Length: 115
Length: 113
Image (cartoon, rainbow over all chains, first blue to last red; front, side):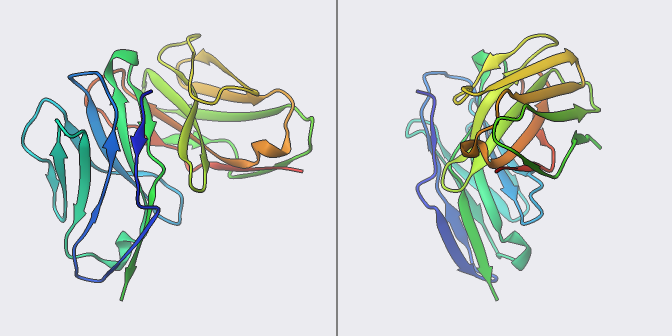
């Protein structure tokens, strides 16, 4: 089965601190893409960061970075200097390249940033 | 900016009704998706389409059908709505393959009574 697993249903962090959200996935493909999406209370899904599996370098976008461990099939998201606006549901997703770009999501992690 | 528009933000329907959820995107994307979002279960793929008149079943297609007659429009149909189809429905679109993000609509919260 092509699955994406987020094992942390809820997390909280103090403002300005660092938090890491976990994601693991199952695949037999060698080339694929991984994404983290954010869904704030407004419900609008927003892309946070993306990673191409053939690139060894971990992706970084400002305060957001990933730890991509291809052999372990792990793709965690690190948020540095957490801000109140980071409070949201975060979803990990994988694109199944040989199925026309089909996107599979994990169960989500609800992150609360506390002042 | 890419825009994905879902026809309704909130919808209340009766059991047994035929329900249409419409989604339109304005960026000429090949792929379009319908997801269902439930607490603790994340986003589950119902159907996706990578071309006009093409459709592929996702993980939970039972009780649903789809229609894609034009590239920009992807409709989700609940043939006979049931209370267990009460949920948030999200539409998304993306370019075919590649390192491209999916763009989402704002979701339709459907309640079946």
